[in-house]
Length: 124
Image (tube, rainbow, N blue to C red; front, side):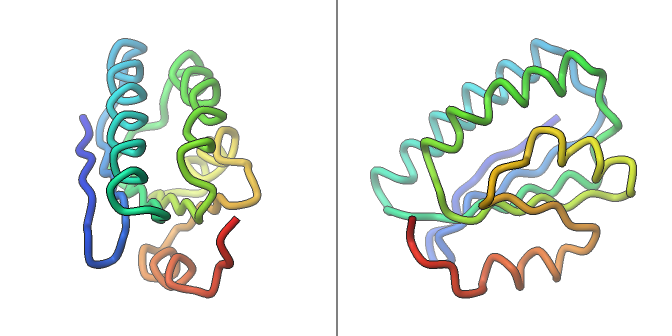
């Protein structure tokens, strides 16, 4: 359903999701993401996030609501750029519902997302 790992050389928290999620999966993901993000900040300082959502399904409203509720906590972990990559315009619209902070962008192309993350973003 998901993987979360931290790439030390690029200071990037990588997230890969797939499939159709339940509210329970979303809760487990949120808890793990916040824990790993907090640990990454503690050990490595400021980091960016690259979320590859291209294999994820369009999620039910309750899942999107749970992700939206988690985002204020996630934004306390990092104010650095957060890029999500999706497979379709519909998925982009759904993702933009909960990734709406100034430091968040949703892309249809992973290379564009990586280029944006590598751009000049002053620390917040």
